[in-house]
Amino acid sequence: MMNLGMIVYFVFTSLIIVTIFFRKKPILIAAFGIMVVGIAEMKSIIGGVQVAFRGLLFTATDLLPIILLIGLVIAMTDMLKTTQADEIITKPFLKIRNVFALYWLLGLSLWLLTLFLWPTPAVTLLGAVALPIIANTKIHPLGLASGFCIFGAVGLAGDYIIQGAPGLLAQASGVEVEQVISESIPLVIGSGIVASSLGYWKLLKTNKSNPIGHKKPNSPKSEEPNSSNRTLYRKKKKSKIVAMIVISAYTLTIFWLLLSGLRGDNAAAATGGVSIAVLILGTVLFNYKTALNTFVLHIQNGLKVSMGVFAPIVVIAGFFLLGTQSGSELILNRSGPGYLELLALQLSGLIYINEFTSAIIVIIAAVLGAMSGSGFSAIPLVGGVAAALGEVSGVPVVPLAVLGQVAAIWTDAMIIPWGFPAVVSAVTRTEAINVGIQNILPWFAALAFVFIWTVI
Image 1 (cartoon, rainbow, N blue to C red):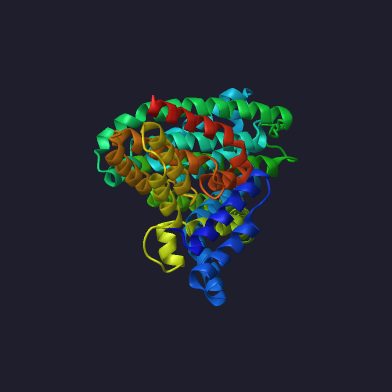
Image 2 (cartoon, rainbow, N blue to C red):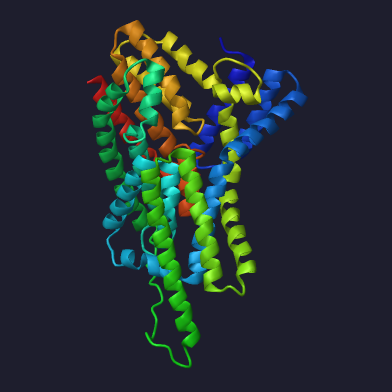
C-alpha cells in the first residue's frame, strides 16, 4: 500500500521525467521534491527542511571522489594546453581525418579499459587524451560523449573480468556466477552492436547539423634555435618532455592497475593520484618561476568545471537517492525497502505472470532501480524480482536475472543524467542532460534487443 510520502515521490518523479522530455532542467523540481517528500514522511515542515539538506549532503559526499577525480584530470589537461603538450599528444590522432575511425578507436579503447577498471576510472583515464582530441579534431563532443556512454555500458553490462555485476546478481537471485556470465554474452554483444551502430549514426547526424571546424596545431617554423627563436625552441622542447611524461605516466598506470588488481574506487584513486603528480611535474618543468601561481590556476580551472557540471547533479541524484533502500534509511530515517523497490514489487503482484510479462516487469524494475544513478544499486532488486517471478510462474530465473542486469547497466550508463553520463559530460565538456537525450534511441534499441532475445 502506498503511503503519502511514496505518492508524493512518484508525482515528482513523473514531473522530472516530463521536464527532461521537454529538454528543460528539472533541478528546481527535484530540490522541491526532496523537501515535500520529507514533509510528507516526517509530518513536519522542520523535518522536511532537514531532509532536504541531508539528501544533498549525503549525495554530495557520495559524489565527491568522482568530482575531485574529474577536476584533477581536467586540471591536468588545462596544464597540457598551457604547455602546448596537447598538440604533441594528439598529433597522431589528427592524421585520422575519418570520424568513423576516431569513434571506433576511442570507443573500443574505453570498452577495453572498462573491462579492467570499470567505467568511471576508465573514462577519466581516457579523457586525458580525449579532451585534446576533441579540441583539435572535427569529431563532435556530444557524439563522442554518446559513444563513451555506449562502450562503457557494453563493458560493465557483462563485467567479465572483475565480475562485480554478475557476482552481485548471482548472490541476489540464487544462481551461479558462471550461469550469469554465460547467459549474458549474447545479450551484451548483441545490444552493444545495435547501440554502438546507432550511436555512430547519431554522431554523423550531429556532425552534419552542428559541424565542428578542424583545428590544426601550430607547427614550428624552424627546427633549429637561433637568436630570435631560442626561447620558443626551449618551450617546444619542454612541451615534448611534458607530453612524454603524460604518455608514459598513463601507460604505466594502466599496466600497474592491470597487474596490481586495483579496481573501482582504488583504481579511481590511483588515476587521480597520477593526474596530480603529472600536473605538478608538468607545471614545474615548463616554467618553475611561475609554477606556484600557475598550479593554483590549473586546480581552480579543473575543479570549477567539475563542480559546475556536478552541482545540479547533486540535487537530482539526491532526489532519486530517496527512492532507494539506503537513501531511505540515511535521509528519511526509515527502514525497509525504498520507494522504487516497493513499486517494482507491487507491479509484480498486479500483473498476470508469464514469460512476456515477467520480462517487462524485470525491465521496469531495472529502469526504476537505475534511476538512483547507479546501475549496480538496481542489481539486487532485479535479482530478487527475477527469483520471485521465476518461483511464481516457472519461468527460468537466469535469463530474467541477466535481462535485469543488462537493462539496469544500460539505463544508468545511457539516459540517467546524474549517472554515468554525468562523468562523461564532465570529461567531454558537454551537458549531461543533452548526452542523455542523445542516447535515448541507442538505449531503447539495446533494451528492445535484450527483451526480444530473452522472450523468444
